[in-house]
Length: 478
Length: 48
Image (tube, each protein chain N blue to C red):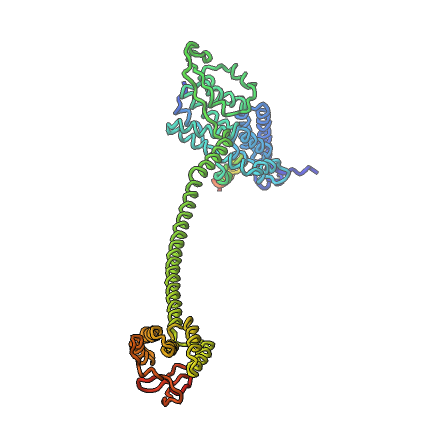
């Protein structure tokens, strides 16, 4: 029994005619295509091993044209793209590879490693975007802008072959062959047989043998800064010879040192912080201090106004106190005057007064006068006291004193009920002092008088008769 | 001598991340056997 053969393309059974029962393709052609694909894969692998990236990519592409299911060839093509800086193209190949064969596929690991660092992936995308911008600028003739973009591109991706090639082309066009050669050397280092790099070298007069030597060019870690720093004056001599230095006697005017913004990013950050702090101290803080000063000034003004108001109130209250004090003093003075002119005796003086009047009634004029004089020391304007004192003086023949007492009464007590009698007696005593005896004073004060008992209202119990005679005739004193 | 304008035309833009999906979907994955199968289909159609 013959062995059953299966189609290597679709898995269908191979018929006796040699054709696949499913896809209809002749088995011989399918096998030939697969073998050819593997053949080109081996070529691509060999070229990749010697870093002939362009040749490898070409061979692997052909390999995939013969057999798209050649997973190894597709994965290797992705690696070649990745090595030459075309990360997105590499991802494309790997994603297709995983979709075609989901088994043990190394492309899964490649994709995982690329996606593991989102920042790096974003930086890679920026590289692609800036390279495309630089390419547009170069096509539009904006070479300076293209240089700026390429500087960023090569700083972020030191293995980006197309970036170096464009950079070299721009430098060749600008006559900066040293820089172009440096860039191309790096291309050769990454992709040893890059045809464009070799051609540019040849155009600048560098023979293939020298280009071959650049393959072993010392590793200088692909620092893009070097490309933007030194620019020695070289002359391009179109004689097929290598580039020769220009006249050594010509002293370079100076060279332009490019600034790597990425390298000094930390310095920029620190400078920014320092600048921010300086702005804070010199702009923000004074403004805030000024605002605080204004606030304190407003508070001072407010408090000053309040203090002034309070002072005004205090002074007005002090004036009011002084006014009240003066009124009080006046009131006290009035009270004192009233007391001095008061016709009201204290209880003790009332008793003394009654006793003195009793003495007068009993005829003890001297004793009565002594009591009256004693009372007069504290009650000098008491009308009844002056009246009785005057009577006593009169009885004792001391007319001048009697006149004085009656005169004091009429002067100080014009409203007294004794006023009329006192004024009369003052005159009579005055006349008596001059030798005339007033008959009315002979016995002005007789017991059992016929007074009508009308109370004088003085409160001393002394009765006073009607008419001109106010001498108590009933002896009712107190 | 290198002609800058001519040379720069040879450079092609590279793919950006947001273009990757379209690039994958639009990728021409036809290989040798696909072309053969297509040729056979066309021939068969003509015969019919």
